Structure formats: structure tokens, C-alpha cells
Image (cartoon, rainbow, N blue to C red):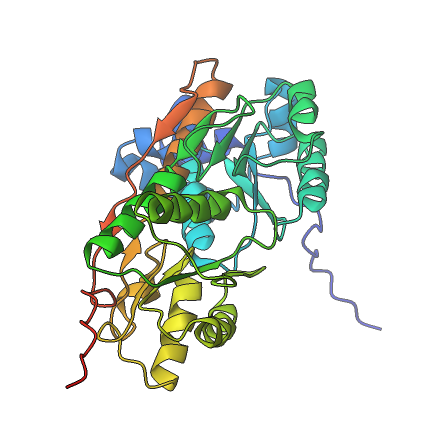
Length: 354
């Protein structure tokens, strides 16, 4: 029987090394390393040449060997409450991009607003040898901070500007942002208010927003009617719809509804349309976050801008700086700008009989 004497390719071809990439790209070993690990500091033409050489050779860095030799994994872990909220999705994208520019990989998980789940996820990320951690908020299970400190890695928290737990914090003042938003509606003449807040699950950012609203109302002498605050678990459009009906049943004279997220506000707005209530003619509705849909609904939503991308980029920069042995700020407060759009307006005067 005839046989084909042609030699089959080896199933284990020798793995390309960084030295091979440097040779093909005609650059030094150091330049090849920088082009792949810190591309932002390498000239674009050189970076592209190295990238093409690495692609041609099917080069993949041996991160395990690199971690063993340097003591660093070049990975950062992050735990967010949910990816169903556009704010966190946008923030994660910005975080991953900035870390990638600095030669780091992002490992991500979401806790679904469950502190025990968050603790388990943090423990798993630490066991994977991450060099740093990005967290959200300032309300952790008691074991979280001692656990991270035991592993001697830097960590930051985000979407809050200060931490009672002594953690470097990057974010906004949620209380002040909703305080100012509520004052704005009162200046438009509104006195009959209701609130929809996603505070049924542990959420210190939304809790601070709720407290800011209540503080402004109390200062202005506005008393909320009983059951005029609806607390939901998830910040969803569906929950906003459900909340609207129950609020109107309690107080049909409501002229302004404050929401702790845009998703809830969009649900309230949709249900107002379905009920034949004119916005802002009969009722003003405001949200919080300034996600993309807020500007696209009819009417566009008055809201507070949360600079998610800026928060995430700073978190990446601070962590890498800390990993390199540099001090980082404990408090970083970013602007939370009130974005006034057409869903809010002056309270319509009550028609007088006769």
C-alpha cells in the first residue's frame, strides 16, 4: 500500500517569543515590550509594526511566567452591582480601555446588589492574584476591607467621593446632587412631590440621593403625603411604571416626581403618557445618571450627569499609580451637573372656579 511520506506539521510548534517579535519588527526588545504592554507611550508607526509582527508570529505573552518573575499579574479586578444599568456598562468599558492602554487586563464580576455575593467575588479575584481592585460604593460586608488589606494590594471605590471606611474614593456627591435638583423643582413652584427610589436593596448611592431629596423638601417646608415614596429593588423601567400607578392612587395632585435613576424616570414618564398626563404641563419628572436614553425620550428627561467614564479612567490611573508605589488621593469629587431638559417645567397654576 502506498504511503504519503510528506511530514505532518508538529502539533506543538515552538512558541514565538518576544525576541522573535522584536526581530521581525526590527526594533529593540525593550521597544517591543513597551509597544505591547504600554502602547500609549510608543510612536504609532512603531506600535503598528510591532503589532503586525506579533500577529504574524501568533505571539501571545506568557503572563504566568511574567507574573512569576515580576510578582505582578498585570490584572485588575472589578466588582460592580450590575451590568443592566447603562452607567456601569459605560464605566466598565472606559475602565477596560484605560487599563489596556497601560498593559493591564480587567477581570469583571457583578454582585447584583448582594453584599455576601460581592464578598465571594472579591475573594475569588484575590485568589486569582489581581494586582488591584475597583469597587463601587461604600457599603461593604464587614470582612471585605480586612480581606483586601491582608493581600496587600491597592484598591479604590467609585461613584462616591468620600469613604467612611478609609478607602480612596472617586465619584460624585450623590446627596448634594439630588438636593440641588429638588431645590430646582421647588423654585419652579412645585409643592406636591413623590419619589421613586431604588433603595429596597442595599445601595448607598441611591440612599444618599433619597436623603438629599428629603432634606431639600424638609428645608423648603414641603411635607410628603404618606406612601408618596416608592422604594424598588432594581432601577428598571418596569419598576418605574409600577411605581407611578401606586403614587397617583395615593395623591392625584402630584405635580413632580423625583427618581433616583433615569431608568425609573423613563418608566414613570411612559406610564404618565399612557395615563394621559401631560409632561411637563401637568407633571414634571426628573431622573439621575444622564444615560443615553434620557435625551431621546419624549420629552427629553431632566437629570443629573454621572461622569462614569471619567470616574473609571481615574480609578485605573490611581490604581496603577498605587501599584507603582505612589500615593493616591483619598477623596476625589467630580461634578454632578444638573441637565435641564423638557420633562421639567413650572407648575401650572390651578384653575379657579367662576
